[in-house]
Image 1: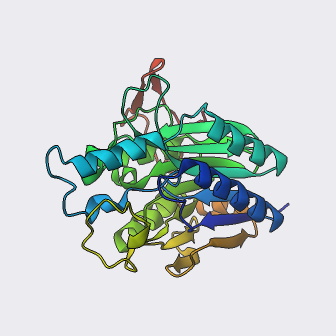
Image 2: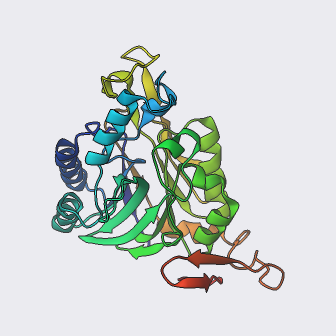
Length: 315
């Protein structure tokens, strides 16, 4: 029997650095997507409450001890979320009420309030947080804003729509991170990006082909006038700092949904049968018949419980 799946990708951005209004928007989007029959809704990298695109466009960003940049970071911290906080609880409740699965990127702070922000992703299914992953290494200019995550989220989880995993941005260029995900048996992989430009399309397509899974690559459209007004930006207010590029790639590495750089709202796509990925595994299964356990040994250091070894079985 076929396993159809309707996917929604949110290219609309949050209300930048406004947590209350952004949560309200997220709830509205979840409700709209559920009404239109979506079973899986994907929000982009740091969607709640906004990817800091200004780090690549502000003329003063890297100046030491710059008071304006520090004030923006302070606002960013204040509008970040705790995984067990009221904002995420409200989103969980919405997924339970609408019987839907979502993947959402967040700016995360921990309960210890240490002052560090993490670039994180949550998979929430029908009210339950099934996966919490923190980006392992902030990329380039992100290092001035984000801390390093750990390896506990490098796995796929069983959801109501299939077995799903997620990586964030340049984690897709990390071969060992990819292998950890492949070995956990993904059927659907969520690739979160600020925008999905040409090289990131290559990474997304490569991941789908290598992992023999569906890849949902989510980007966002963001204009310069959505950035903090305190910052000096080189770009015109109407300039797109992030141009979307969201797409869906099949397990054969070809596009199922071509990249979109124009939609400022939500994209929808219907997969007719998720099980077709298993036909592609006949030629390549990097966690099964195309793996040599007798030659290679692979492990992940898990900060919560020491080291656990991965094999070709699902976790």
